[in-house]
Image 1 (cartoon, rainbow, N blue to C red):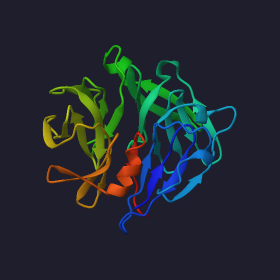
Image 2 (tube, rainbow, N blue to C red):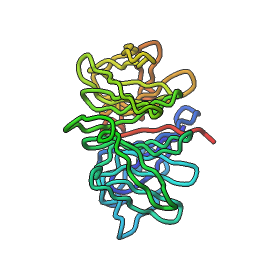
Image 3 (cartoon, rainbow, N blue to C red):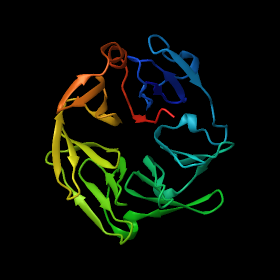
Image 4 (cartoon, rainbow, N blue to C red):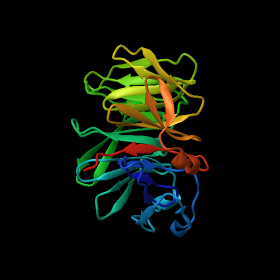
Length: 276
């Protein structure tokens, strides 16, 4: 599988062959690398880097928290707002109420671009070509003062999950209603996998069922940064441990030699893509 890294402040892509099967992933490392030529290139195989920012947008000087895409654009959630790359230009879209964005998700069905960040969550609408207007769910429907939201999840029934460390807000776009899911201890990070929502509650990895109940399916002391599916198993990126495989409620190292390298880094994020 292919292993993709993107350390700040530059986007670098690495590939690693592991046991003759391909697992494409993006990992945004918390290691600050000042020049792409200084990036780690030892056991991790090939690397490729391409700069897509310019002096006006300066995305490479910001922290990128999340990346998603539509059929024609790539969207970046950053400490300096929303950046959109259309294949030719990278443009920053500014809204004073949502300066810091922690996550971003594009809904193919509705065409809405959802974002979550400091003190709120909402969606962006392209009301005219190249121009996006922000609609705040928090101010319009819900009041959650002084809460930073970190993750977004979309489910097949059209609901949108927004997570912070004290609650998960479940937003129904059809009627604007919001329900809450509260932790048993404290939430770490939420993860969407094939339309299912998982969340780490303390040391427990839980599946959230349609009724909003937390069903424990595994346990780890390390923080789970992201989860991707691979066949009938789940691949977990643990912040300081590396890549682990979850089967039958047990975690095992995906590849010990790779984890030896990853344990010297701090995994920031991960995302999987189809081989095609």
